[in-house]
Structures are given as C-alpha cells and as structure tokens.
Length: 510
Image 1 (tube, rainbow, N blue to C red):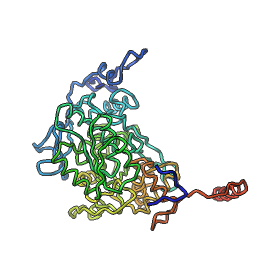
Image 2 (tube, rainbow, N blue to C red; image 1 turned 120 degrees about the vertical axis):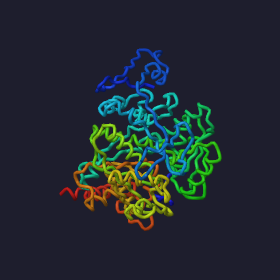
Image 3 (cartoon, one colour; image 1 turned 180 degrees about the horizontal axis):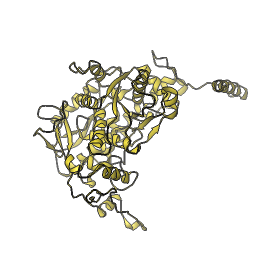
Image 4 (cartoon, helix red, strand yellow; image 1 turned 60 degrees about the vertical axis):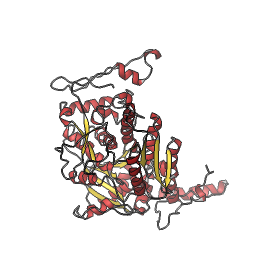
C-alpha cells in the first residue's frame, strides 16, 4: 500500500552447587572479581574456571505429544540429539523433562536460583532463556550455546491505557518484542540453533537450518545462525511481509527464497525439502523452540515476585506460543514455585481464525483449516496451524478462551495503545482488541491482573502505522489517526495552529 506524501522519505557452564538436605534456600555461586584485564579472556573462560555441577543428572527427551491426556507412558522416545520432528504415528513431539530429578530441589530453591541469575553477565545465565537452562536443554554444554542474552524483556504497567480504555488498574504488557531481532522468536531460536551447533560438532548430517516464515522466524533464525556460522535458508511468501522483516534475514546473510504462495504453502515446501536434504527444520513443528519460548511465562512470574496473574493473553497464528506459555506456567506449578496457573486467552485475527472457529464449536467438531485472508497482523496470517493440538490442549487445561479481532478493531487498538506511550505491533493490537471485547462482556474483571503478550516490536510495522495515520486504508475509519498538520512557514500561521490545538487539548480539563 503506497504511503502518504505526508510521510514520504528518500528511497532506500556455571551451575549452582547442590543443596544440602533439606534444599538450601539460596543457591551458592562463586563471585568473579578481576582487578586486571589479564584475569580472563572472555565470559566463556570464566564459566569454565568456576564451573560446578549438580549431583542430580537432569535430562530431557522427545516423546509423542498426546493432546488428550499428555500421557507419558508411551515407550516411544528419542534423544534430543536425534533429528526427528514427528512421532511414528505422524503426530507432534514434545520435550519431556525428567521431573523426578528436578523435584529433588524444592520450589524455593528454583525461585532463588533463577532470581540469582537475573541481569548477570555470567555465561550463559545472563540470558533470560539460559538462566533456566536446567529446564530448557539441561544436557547441552555451555560452549555449544548460541545466545544474544535474549529474554529478560520489559513487563510494562500499561497504566494509562488500562485506566482510560479498559477501566483496569492491573493491565501489564510483556514486551517480548524488545529483543535481539525484535520479536519473541529469539527465545526459541537460541535453543534450536544451540542444539544444531551441538549436532554439527558431533558430526551429525546438518548442512544448514531452514524455515518457512511470515517474517519474525526468519529474522531470528538468520541472526542466530550468523552468530554461529551456520548457513540459514528461508522460505518467505512473496509480497506478504513488511520490508523491515524482509531485510533482516537478507542482512544476516540468509539464503532467502521469495515464493509465490502464502505461509501454509511455504510450510509445506520446507517440510518436503527437509525430508530430502540435510537441512534442519526450524519451524515450531520442531518442539525445541517451545522450550525457549516457555521461559517468557516463567519470567512473568519472576517479575511479579512469583505471584500469579489472573489472565495472560497471547496472539496466536501457528499456535506454538500459547502451548509454550502453558508449559512454562505448568512446570512452575508442578515444581512448587507457584500454586496455580493463570487462565490463558489466545487472540486471533478474524481474517485468519481457525482456532477461534474451532473454539466456538465447543471443540466438538473436527478441526478445519481455513484459507487465511490478508491481515495487518501478518505474522499470524496462518490458516492451517501446525500446533493446533498443542493449543487446544493448553486452553482446555488452563480453562482458556479464544477471541478474535477484525482489522479495524486491531488497528484501532494498536493506535490507542501507541497514543498512551507504547509502540506496539499489529499482533499486540489483536490481543488488546480481544481484551477490550472480554472486558465489555464481563469475562475479565476490572481488578483482575492481566498480562498481554506483545510478540514483536512496532518498528517492524511502520508502514501499517503510516497507512493508518494517513487514513489510506480502504474500509477502515482510522478513528484514532493523528496525521501531521501542514502549516505555512510564518509565525502567525504557526501560532494560529498551536492556539487551536491547545484549546482543544485544554477543553476536557475545564
């Protein structure tokens, strides 16, 4: 969509010591002090010098995902060092941790451990993901980890938006888009690329990593692969992502294929290609990514001093993230860090809403994919989500809800949020529009603590914002547009315009 002339610009492994019995309330660490630059070469060397180990061996493996009961009695399992994406029956896989080993340490121990790592530069625990390493990839060597110290993202009290738009005092926005490549996908990609790095060092047949993407996945994959020196291959739907998203994998040296299809078509192609070539599949069909993404849920609890919010609202497209949040919350409850989990809401764009339609049927009808129509929330423009079974399971287990937002609703919600000091993506607009509907219906109460997950940075979607504020979007009223005012370059004209503006601004206060 062409931008308005008003906006035109020129073209262009340190590990904790074991607790005594009962577990120590505080994990113990060696404090590293250096009075000379010769004391250390880098943070990896420091980690080697001060490494300690647990007496309990933590482990994880792939098991078939069972959407009906998450039954773990199946004898089918795979090492995480195997290259496998589906179970023998063709179903999804899940990463299953040895919970009995993790339970040798109580909830207080894990809370203190995670808190002690927060904000540090100790490798690799300065990352919001790898600060929970025992719960993510417990057996990986810290030397194999590829990290940009992702995670630890801002949990923002949306005070003005909450009070003025929703009459809520406890609205929070988890800004996962304030990250290395500008989206929550970094949380999962650090895990996946780290495991690939490990496999390549083990001489496993992996020549590169590939993904189908609506933008953010390819940005994260290409950045982390570039950091590790691993080739990345990206399948993008032609003319369906923003220029800011397209330039990221290009800049990071990925081999980018622009394909004349939608995301679902790209996904089908990458699955066929990775079945024939030694290219590791990086889409959320691969359950490793969800292990990183679940740490955002743990972070939310940590940022609330381990108090559980009432609701968490997550935009949904391919639907891996809603399950990842459930898994993070559930592990915290199962291991005694908290005593309950929040209710989850998955928010979908009405133009790409297969989960919403399935939910409205009462989950009774067989799931039916849809042909996704164009939406400003392009990253969730997916009609046949890979993780549908995971999402349904997570929502059922959390007494969850699915809501949808039209294009006008999501763009208006985004504009309103921006006008209160945020700068969010259209996908976060979907989540906020869903929250508005649930507040109006009385489903979410005025005093209930609610977290909206913001999945990407607004700077990736400036063209959508430009079109909105230029009122150049067909069939949208753009009620909260704020275009610049053209004014002559003389003092009198400027004063007239300012006086008119100030009189309007002061009127509500009188």
